[in-house]
Image (spheres, rainbow, N blue to C red):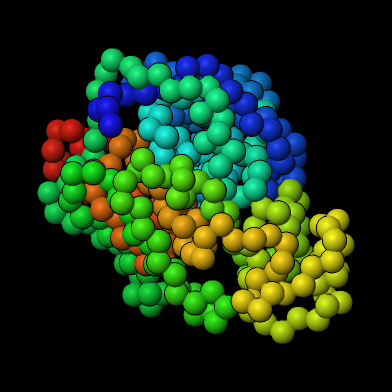
Length: 313
C-alpha cells in the first residue's frame, strides 16, 4: 500500500435522512489538497463554517459522535469518517447542508461506494503517522471497559462486545489490515436493544430511523401487539422475533455483525486523531464516549511525551 497521502478525484454526494433529526439532506465529499486533513463545512449556515474532524472538537457522544465549534454542530460523523479511513483517504472537505450525516442503512457501505465512484487520487506528500514506543490504555474497571493501543508496524483492531445480554452474548471482531475494511467491516450496521429503541421513540430521538438501518435485539418478553405497534410507527410490514432474539426486519451479513459495527465505530472515532495510526488497538466494550476519551488520552500522551517527531499532532 502506498505511503503517499490521498484524496478523491472528484466531488461525490450521498443523500438521506439524519438518524436523530429526521431531516433530509446531502453530504458532498470534495477533493482537498495535501495536508488538509478531513474537514466538515456546514453549507446551510451563513458564512459556511468549517469544523476540523479532530478530537479537540468533540462536544457530545450521545448515540453518536458530535463535532462542534462556535455553537455549530455536526452529528453522527463516525460512519463517514470510518469509510474515509478504511479507503485510505487523508484529505477531503465534507460539505453538508444539514446538521447530521445521512444514516442510510446504519453502516459505512454507502460512503465507501461513493468514494469508489469518485476515485482515489494519490498525492505527492507522504502520510504522517502516529507511532508509539509503548502501550497506552484507558480503563473503566467498574464498567468492564478497557481500550489499549500497542506499538505495531501497521494499523489493526480487535473488539470484544459483551453487554451481559443473553441474546447478544459475547462477540469478537478483528481487522488485521485496513485494506480489508471495505469487505469485512463497511457493510456492518448498527444495532440496538428493543428497550433502547422504545426509549428513543418515546423521547423523539430517532426521527430518521427505520427498521432497515439497525439490527434490533429483543432481550425481554414482548407481545406481537407490541411488535405490531413498533412496525406501524416505522410504516413497515408486521415483524416478529426470530429464534436467535433478533427482529426479522433484516438478515445479518455476519454472525458477529454487531461486534464488527463496533469496530467500525472505533475506526471512525480514532480517526479524529487526525493522522494515520500504526498500532494494534484492543477494545473491550467500546462506545463513542470511551472511544473519544481514549483518543484524547492518546493525543495527550503524544503531546506530553513526544514519542517520535512523526507522532506529533
